[in-house]
Image 1 (cartoon, rainbow, N blue to C red):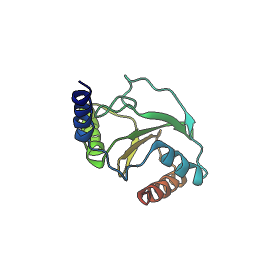
Image 2 (cartoon, rainbow, N blue to C red):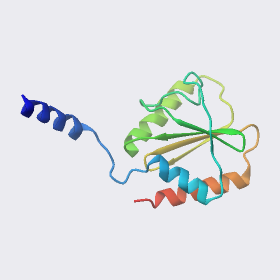
Image 3 (cartoon, rainbow, N blue to C red):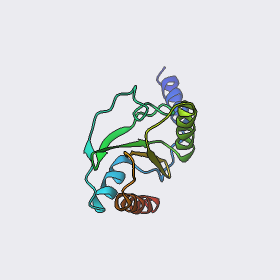
Image 4 (cartoon, helix red, strand yellow):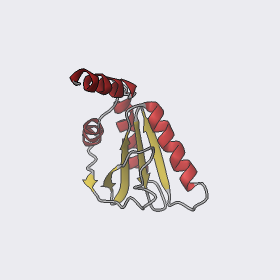
Length: 136
């Protein structure tokens, strides 16, 4: 009986595709801190467009400059791509607030801003992404 349970567990875990170079949430947070960007945890409703599960993943929700920043951590780049495609499909027919999304490896980030994207924040986010691209 124990052998059957072990075999089932091995099969289940071997079917999951986890990128061994995958970025973890802690890597993302540390990269923001290195750019002197302070993220404040913020609760967001799962019913909100920017807060819904995408490809089965619920976002970690923060504010940056008083505006929502959502971080999705997937097991692989492929799953991240599916998450972004799901977002596009779900929002294709609705008017969505001004936002920008960023992709790096297995991470998908949405930054929701009012009217104009702050150029300095944009530059710092790009530096965060560059740093994360080189995380191994």
